[in-house]
Amino acid sequence: MPSSLEHPLPRFFVPSRSLASADIVIDGDLAHRLGRVLRMRPGDRMILLDGRGRAVEAAVSAVRSGAVHAIPLAERHEDTETASSVVLCAALLKARRWDLVLQKGTELGLARFVPVMTEHSVVALDERPSPTRAARWGRIVEEAAEQSRRTRLPTISSPVPLEDAFASVPENARAVIGCVHARAIVLRDALGLTNAERGDGDGDIWVFVGPEGGFSPGEVDTARHQGIVPVGLGPRVLRAETAALVMTALVMHELGELRPRRMASAEC
Image (cartoon, rainbow, N blue to C red):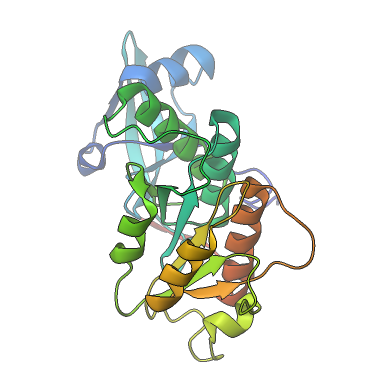
């Protein structure tokens, strides 16, 4: 019999209040997507997620104009999230390249994105919130989370100056900054994780990545004085989005988050 991994059910994020009812009502854009685009019909099954860790297998019970109704079948217990929260503070890039960081970072398991402005940034900081930009970023991480079988949606902060991001690092967190620096070390040594610490969720990890021109010497010195460890990524020069994703993947590897896990479900 084929496993659920070979034929996974489609996954969709819904408001958490929706999952509290025996008659789950889905409306808005998602209802249009389910009924008109995917042409789901009564009896079709799917996984509904609240973005906070809860996953419910449900069956479509009715497709109506403007709404899709579903019945919860089973609570899914899926261990797909990282034990430690990994936060990426990356220089804000031009649209397509930043979109790539959001998409692939979500797939890798990042808990939070913090766009930062640096001395060498080429994208200007706009203090005014942009509903259009926020909506696009939200769609990108939501679709990436659905595709990668995540149960939690990463959060995306408003862009902030780099100094503000430095100051936001909690005292118990490990923090690294990617750079070409005389005192830069390999990421494994910078994190200093023991085998017992891998996977135990003890403290967040913050990762700082600069723009195409990298961080300035002054920015790196400021980071060092605040306990943020400079790390190198080898002799080759990486594009900013490449560096962000390579550092994220290396952190996940050090945390033991790239090893396979088993997932199970339980009847409601």
